Image: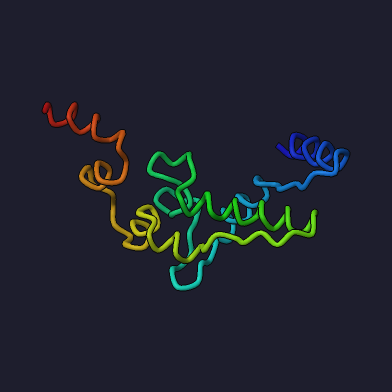
Length: 128
């Protein structure tokens, strides 16, 4: 992964592009979590808030954290002043973060409510 990111950074530098090392961001969050004012700390743990219920794809909050880093990089590289997403507002409305804060095990009903693909699984599991 480090070699891949080094190649991406070299290509960005050679072409004058902004670069964001998402792997470094996620590695840091895995070690330290990511504190969001007024909401709490999201983690890379399953139901930790950074990823959706599949444990692979970022939640709305995870996307906002990466977008924020991309905007920081663009602003630094090009001298722009793009506004960053409101992480606190996004996290406060994100069901994956809300589930993480409740520290409860996800039930089938939770999955059906927050993950549309789980609706099909519900019908198979419950023979509906």
